Image (tube, rainbow, N blue to C red; front, side):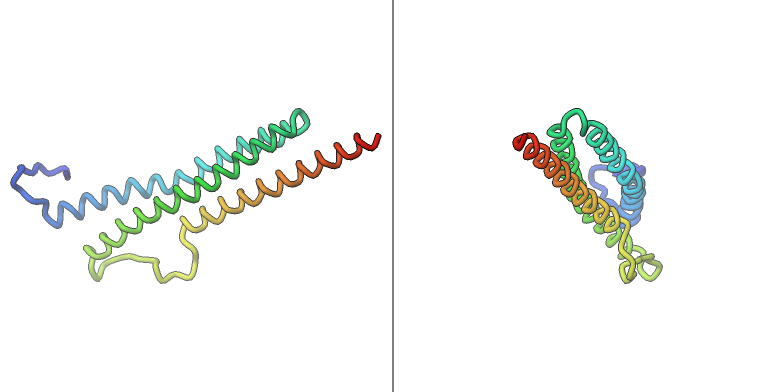
Length: 148
């Protein structure tokens, strides 16, 4: 439970639940700010490999770029699920905080999670465009060598 010792017959108090939710919220907040670094590191390394390997094997580069697209989609799903859990904690804490709650729900600006998801969708689009570009280049080379 919480750091306080509870007997098996004791029920957690509202304060115990509040403290536990804030501890979980803090942990999730730390993870939230690590996710963009994790995804940018993974995708950056894959993009670097894919584009530095184009001259060696275009096929391998295409597969790596396709994997980048998959990582982007999985990232969006992870962020979406994370956001649902994060929002549940925020809702519970806001309810317990009462009139002292702090919320940005009415803000016109997108949330951090929405911004991260938008960037991941952008990397998916970049992967698709890069695959198309490399594939069309391969087709041009194949057509020119067939003509010779």
